[in-house]
Image (cartoon, rainbow, N blue to C red):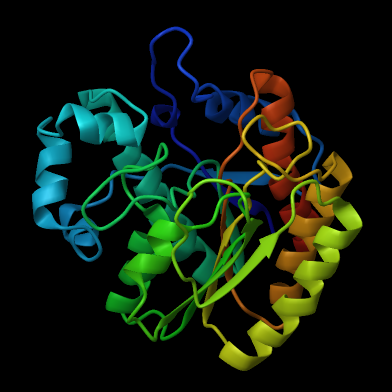
Length: 303
């Protein structure tokens, strides 16, 4: 059985020179995965832009209209981290459509990965921190609305707390938000997830994995989700310029393999997204993101 990976060339768009967001990582990740020797071949699937109906399940109609029609004011654009453009709108709709397709593939096959996604800072009515649409929230709400699942667990291991996702699902019993993050990192004002684990700066592989292993099995057993959405942000890496933790390449792989295998052992479908990662060395950054797909292939190959 091949590993299903969702990708679209439109995940990468042109940005102004010296823009801090590493937009090229999506293209380079696709190129690296095409050449990688994984435990099984990749089946590539191409998403469509997310529908307005799906967006309106979590985002206000006023905000979505302003985003699509280029009516975000300068302050809102600064908060997003991007200057508005039609290409940017198409990109975030494709990325979110990719996460929806990843969920559909995961429910059919048990495990699937997006080559983008994890925009967990987007709120119902505002963008924040390079996140304009909350793809995790839109995908969870879509799966619930379609009756595909009754309980969704969002496992957010990006170095930054998933504050937008937490606030969007504060009163939604069908979604449980679990975030392990650097306690003294963005956002300065944290939301309240259903379960938050705030880590000290500089934490390395062994202690990070211990914190994860102490919580995840019990959470899977207690909540019994029908679907896990996994945000595998690599900004926990020791060389990331926006992360305050100190995981190694091996630590990233061990983390991802552990999460995916724990769900696989319990027959819980997993839709995984790549989350954050910030490095001017795009090849090195893409290779960190590729650890997720390598771990996914290994988990599937192990049965």
